[in-house]
Length: 173
Image (cartoon, rainbow, N blue to C red; front, side, top):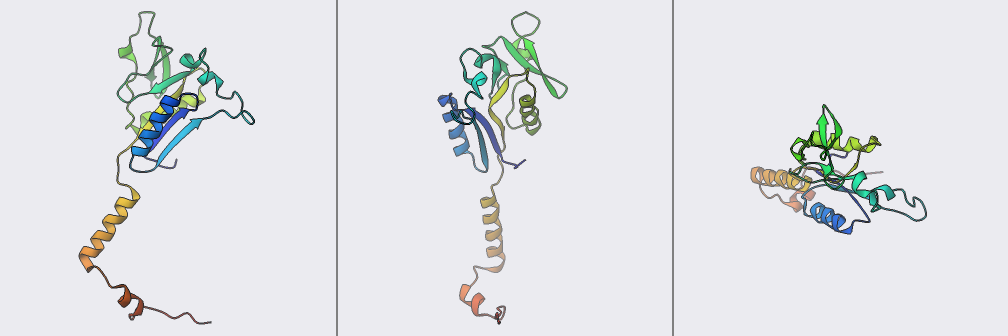
């Protein structure tokens, strides 16, 4: 919704992953949003336990990795698209392989949207990692380009002349 060019999710109890997401967000040129599932002993104690507890984490989380198939539950399950919805496939029963899983592309806006919808499906794992990344000019770069174009067309300008020239006004009571 904010049109950020970098969107990721991580959790406080996975410091290695969190550090990786922060480094990537910091290196990104442009607006970056990193959502952190952070436990608070006072207001939401245990709210994210199913995603951080060793006994349930593998089954309830899937890591979005650019160019990698979406697998979870220690490689026992995968995700593939059925239209615009994900479905879980069993990778151990012999009917499917990792080649049947969707290979994640963090530069694909539509894929990021579909992955974000896993949040609303209770029977699906929760995605963590970079949802979306787009390399595009930043506001600062575009502003500088505009300033450079005006300077090239009109010259450097003269602040004293601008303030004391005929295009000024006087404010009276």
